[in-house]
Length: 216
Image (tube, rainbow, N blue to C red; front, side, top):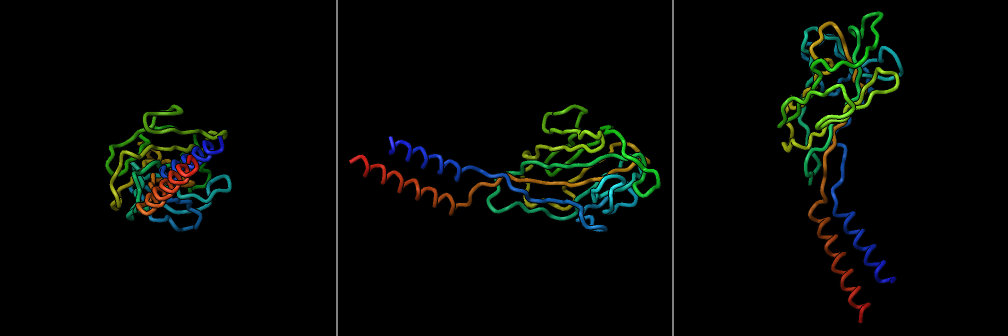
């Protein structure tokens, strides 16, 4: 019985060590005023990192100067050594009823109206006003202001990611409004490096040899 339990424990250890892990590749928190962390805007005005119009968050925000405002990430993104594929992109943001620097600007209820995202190797992904979709999930916070989307971006295998490879349309086709983004997080699915597999294999061989000696 003890031998059986030991083999089970060893098998579990090998399985855990051989499995892939989800790691954060990029984590934009927009906590430094004036630092947009590489994100640029098109069709927007007053892009900056500032205090939110309400609440305690420091956010990336802008107003819309056209009916197609969008954000691009301008720097190359490199996945960790041994990555298997991209995993998710999560964005927490909310829409506004005007430019964030205008007096009286307030938050408004989420309306998709063309809100969408694009990443390397993908077409546009446009969420629907439901709690889940084909390759995204999202939740509304109790206040009805902030919304958090998580997109499955595993269909993009490009690495490193070229400049302007990521695009986010935060308010869709609505001119004269604005938006605030609390954070953007990108994760990847990383597998153990070759030397890790070698170590795991070595443990397996030792375990089998130990078990055979115990059977004699």
